[in-house]
Every structure is written in C-alpha cells, then in structure tokens.
Image (tube, rainbow, N blue to C red; front, side):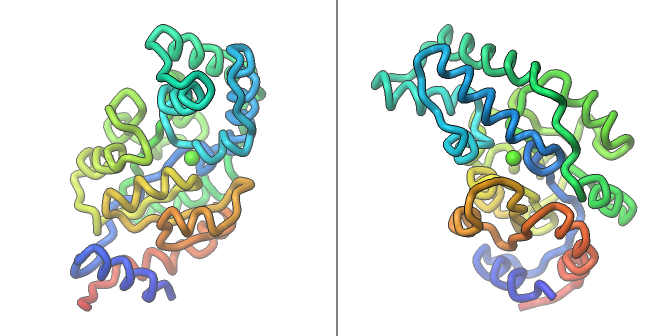
Length: 247
Ligand code: CA
C-alpha cells in the first residue's frame, strides 16, 4: 500500500531494501499532546525577559533545544546570542511554567501503536529534544514496559539537537541498526528534517496547527493526520517495510 513512498525513499538514499527492526518515536506532539502547554509556556516565559514568541512560532521551532530557540529570539531582538547565564535563566523560567501546566494527556492512538510495535518484536526507541528529568518516570507510568532507558535519546545525549541528524543518528546507534532498518515518527518540521537527514524513512503525524505542506516540505516520506490514523494503518506500513524487495 505504501510501496511508492518506500521505493522513492530507497532510491533517494541509494538503499537496496528496507528491513524494519526499530521505530524511533519523538515524544512531544507524538506520544503526549503536550505542545499546547509548551507553546503557552514559551510565550509567557519569554515575555518575562522582554522577548516575543507567538504560539505558532513555538510550534515551528518545536524539537529545537531550549538554548537554540532562545538564541533565535535574542538574535532577532537583541542582535546577539544569549549568554549561558541568560539562556539558562530563561529556559528555567520556561520549564517552571511548563511544570505548572496540567499534565498533558497521552496522544490518542499512541498507546495502541506502541503496543503493536512491541508485540511485533520491533524495538521502540525514544528520540526527544526534551531534557525533563521526570521524563523516564512519566513514560514508564503512561506506557509501561515499552521504553528501555538505554534506548532513549534526550537533550542530555546530543550536542546538536533537531533539525541536525545527530539525535536520530544516536538513536540508530543505541538500537544497533542502520537507517533502512528504522522508521521515524515525528510531528514537527524540524523533527522531520532531522529524521530524513539521518537517512531514516520519516512518517509525519500532523497533530498540531501547522499546514500539512509544512511537514511535506520538511521532507516527510509519508503523512498521517493523527497518531490514531497511523495506528489504524500500522499493519500496512509494517508489511511494506518488512517485505524483502529489490529495486
Ligand atoms: Ca515533537
């Protein structure tokens, strides 16, 4: 069913065949419906420092490290990067407001998809730009038995966050697989860029307010309107990427 998208991907990267072994999941906007909280925390926290960011811009920058997002704002308004002292203070303020938000619900369809992936013997890998320390507890509470600590990439693991390929390259490394043996599930343009730059087939799930075209322009190999839609069609996706083919 998704052979065309698969073959286009293989050809573009010069790979011979897909052989699915692991699925690399982004977290915010994919596993948790946490982006509304992030967007409002960004807007309110930056206002404390005289910096302006709209909720839409927060969505566009989703996946970037806090440091990276803050520098975009200070360069635009102050003409320079934030000092380490400044950006740490700003990111703390954002994190503090985020913590006060009501806990974001699971994304509908996320749990079902994770269970299918696990039951099929595929390896679930987490690749997030987040640096929340409570992350692992939260994942284990919401999705018990799915993610292993050694198969998580967080902001503590990488020097260059999304849209650089480093987080996903590290995800491949931790899972011990090559690009054509994985699939990335992402909701944000920068995350999609990171996944494709790592050479991995990247599925975009449009769970936010940005137009579909933004995700396709970022390089998404396949797009679903929601995690539930991806969950419902997962068997087809898996079949397409498990079949041994040569082009
Ligand atoms: Ca995300």
